[in-house]
Amino acid sequence: MILNGNQLQELLSRGEDEELEFKDRIRQPSLLARLVAGFANASGGMIIVGIREPSQVVGCDPSLLQRVYDAALAQLEPPPQTELEFVTVGGKQLGVITVQRSSNLVLSSGGAFVRQEERTVAMPASHIAALFTQKAEVSVQDINSLAEAVTRQTAIILELQQDLNKANSLRGRAVEWVISGIVGAILGQLVSCLAN
Image (tube, rainbow, N blue to C red):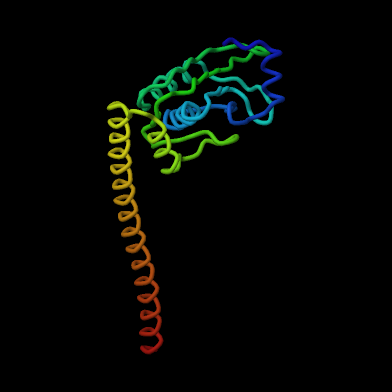
């Protein structure tokens, strides 16, 4: 779907909603993967890159967006139906990513996401369970995708816990060093006062 200037102005005046997201830029594939998964797990939609809210066209770097888009798709399981197109509006390039609604649960490397109003949020467990119970038959692909996502999430949680433990231990040591320094300075002052 190639947008013309009038269609873009109509979308800008509509603003973000459950089927439309504006980004001035996207540099992290994980962010784009979450957005795409969120749209695919809802009713589909469009991400327009090169728009600074509320409605300023700032443009985007097409080669950078293409790389981020390709990397984001590699983080999705199963990959949803998407399309990336570039359109020039007012002399500036915009990236238009169209995402089709998926009949399967689409998971990103960061987890399960869904679009709600103008936000992409973590999909609640009850929503995931409802998706599987609505299906007459759960596919092996769905089960494998969910199992892989749980495994990835577990690894991420473990890594974050290790990072937190390291940060806490360094913070604990730093506080200990500061307290030791203060106590040492006070004792040094007391000894020098007693010596005089």
